[in-house]
Image (cartoon, rainbow, N blue to C red; front, side, top):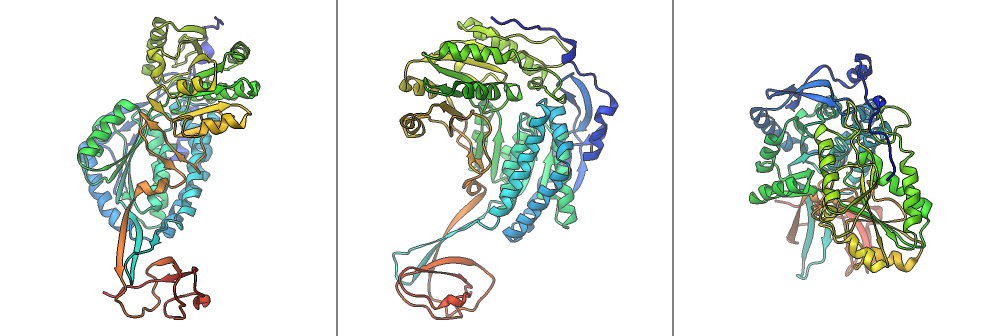
Length: 557
């Protein structure tokens, strides 16, 4: 076992008023109202403290939402939805573009706040805010591509169309580990799709929730739009339960534990609502005998230690081919000794604190459980005595069949195990209830194609020669099995935030005139069209056989 000190005064962080001066640059004070309702800040619930996890000292106070605040906010949001859904999608995209610009102007202040209140290192805090900015850019383009389709009808003189419409109101319940990025994955898409958004942030990251909301609210106000387009509640389980039960919220997006996510899903399903779940991960990295081991070691370190092991995509299981097991493990133990633990705002820190004192206690309980099930602590395994919630990054040698390996211990704990062949490695990867992210390190094409195919990884994210974390916004983010099955961010995830209608039309109307009502791409394959009344393009005189045209369609009542 590699020994490291369990006591160090430098891990603590004594706060001063000056260190918090930047908070006023993002609209925060010593006491803040935690509800944004109908364009007004209020909060009639309990007053709670936001705590710095590096020293467990109070940063600021927040007045949370009451149930009366919630009902008032939902009434306003329902009215705002009637307005927002009628605004053309590209114009909604323009509002989201402005939100992105407003976030850019405060990027470093917001990133510093994420680091301060959540506990992740500063580079990660800034990176999280940048991810929302990137989502804004993505959503702007998407606002001009919410396309329906024209489907060939089997009946003469009929057309079949597919159309996407807004749901109305989307509820977003986010977790502490990504206190603002998850909002971006959901809200940027939901807004351009024509939905209003109701946001309940994590109860331990209220300041981030308020600061983000103030930036969005400023953009809405500048454009003379209802503030209730984004309605925000700081609160606890009571507000989350109200959102899950509320029939006015068509879709509830929940990020958190599998246990709580299942409860949310059951409540939403009882009212036939839609649910988007992003739940626990138990992610594995497989290192084959032909892998670039230095690349693998760096990737494992980043994936297992980053965010103090509190990402849903954190690498929790390392599967090493038996022929390189000791080589890779020895190298990994060596780099773990070099990890700088400390104040997440300080340059050079790689591992900040766990988010809460309860998280630190869960780490201790988890280590005891690991030992009771035959796990051998190779390095770490201790809480660091300090003012904050610091723990040692830990590597454990353990059987893949141990019950504790099937669970998600939310901290920097890495289980190491060996395998003999690819088949066994894939079986171990797929043997846990969760199915979020996975990765394999190899150069062999036959292994790669097996890994990404139907008999390979059963996860929603399948990586090759890169770590389990660090997904890009352009792809759909989410996982299978106990991870919940939801998909956020890119690809066609936008379809979850809209409702699909299939239209059947019989061509009984008279020749139409050009109207700015609907734009369609339509393929003509059986006759020549020459009417300038029907087609806007100068190339309206189409040639037969699958020529393509865009036209505006106006249906007479």
